[in-house]
Each structure stands twice: as structure tokens, then as C-alpha cells.
Amino acid sequence: MFDSAYPSRSVSRSPYDGWSLDERDPDYINALMPVWEWFYRYYFRVETDGWHHVPSEDKFLIVGSHNGGLASPDMHMSLYDWFRRFGTDRLLYGLMHPNMWKAAPGVASQAIKCGAVIAHPRMAIAAFKRNAAVAVYPGGGEDVFRPHSMRNQIYFAGRKGFIKLALREEVPIVPLISWGAHDTLIVLGDFYKQAKQLHEWGMPWLLGIDPKVFPIYLGLPWGISIGPLPNFPLPAQIYTRVCAPIYFERYGRKAALDHDYVETCYEQVKTQMQQELNGLVASVEARNR
Image (cartoon, rainbow, N blue to C red; front, side):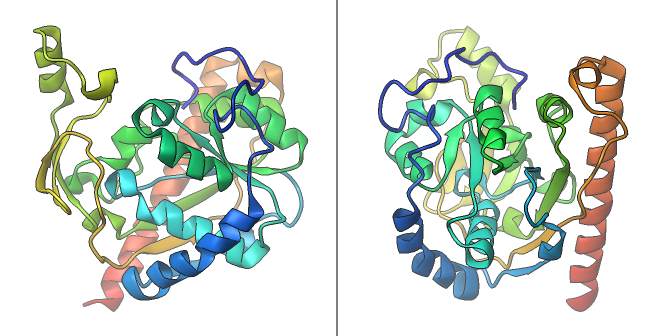
């Protein structure tokens, strides 16, 4: 998430631009809770476990894998789970890609009221200084639009910035996995290489934004969609799990600058999350036989 170039400023200059920790609105969150509850209980029929792994007080980094296109219903249902368990007083900030402000500024401003900030290390560090939890989905668009054939895989697209952040700020990683939301739309494949070639030949990107992913998927409301268009999720059952915190042997700036050590920690997190996902999938499929 942090491996791309981002603006260097970290002081908010306009309302809801993602550079402030003070635009989170508990009243707005509470107003959304009944809506989220309906989707949670009746539409997605969410089953979840592992919330006892959440540290009681200390700051930590939630690292998630998400599915289901831009709607990302598993992420929203996990957000609902957090607030119904811990209330709106316990601080949680989510790192959101800067492109959201270009593609959908109205959606971005609503997300900010729920705790979203721009995905920049300075914002994460500022949140940790408030002893807040920070959530990041390193795989970004490549993860949320990964093909249906990859639905049982943890996929971070090789991004390791979240490891460097955890090491530098000396915080544990709390993995958050999910399964089921891949059926809220069916991604047939990613054709970004072909789309990029057309762009080089003169085809403009929608809204002037390089999407980094170009899926073809089956889902609502389009039937079949070409490109990373917004979607309304189908009513598939979603399963989520909070996993045991991951602590590394070494922390600090020196550890964060050690390329080999960062790679080792990255593989540790990805491997442990993959094992947890394998277990979750196996348990669900065993019950549904």
C-alpha cells in the first residue's frame, strides 16, 4: 500500500481530503449501524470468530484480505463487527487509496466520517500516536478484484510497505481474513495488460486514473462488467475471522530498513494468513457437504 509514490504533505488543507484524524464522526457511524446490521444478519448472513484476539488496549495494525469488488462487503461487515463490539469510542482508522478522492469524492467523504484516512505512512503513524488501531488492505484493487479462481488465496500483490510500518512503529499485526465475498460478484479474469496496451495506443483511462487492475466480472447491476466499475453485491454468505496477533523478533528503524528481514516478515504474515484461510475454507466446506 505504501510502495507507490504519494503526496508528501500530512496536514489537512480542505475538509474530507483524508489528511486529518479529526473528521471521524461517531454520530454518523451510529446512524449507519442499523443499515449495516440488516446486511450483516439477513443479506450476507455473516459468521465470524476470533475477536478475542484483538488486543484490549495497545495500538496494532490490522492487515486484511478483501473480496467482492469496489463494494468490498467483507470489509464493511468487519467494520460493523468492530463497532458493535467496541463502540465508536475506540479509535480505528482505515488507510484508503488516494484514487478514491479522484474517482468518487462523495464516497470518500462518507468513508472519512467512518474513520478512513489517506493511505500514507504519516497518517498511520499519527493514528498510532493516538493509540488507535489502523487497518490496511495491502493488496488493494488487485486483491479485491482478484479472479474467482484465486478466491482461496491471500494476495498482497507483492506490497511490503505495511511490514515496514509495523516494524518501524513496533506494533503487532492482527490478520483479518474472509471467505464468501468472492461470490458477491464473479471475476472472470484480470485484463490489465491488454487494457494498458490499448492505453499506450491512445485509449484514455476512465477519469484519467490508471486503475492497475482491469477485471471482467459477472455481477450487479451490469450483468457483465468490463473494467473496475462499481458493483452491488449478490447475497452470498460471508465468513470472517480475526487471527492471533503476529509479533516479530526485531523491531525499529533498522529492522524496517533491512530488506531481507522485511521479506522474511512479509512471507511470515502471508503464510500464516494463508494457513488460516485454508482452515476457514475447509471448515465451511465440511459443514456444507
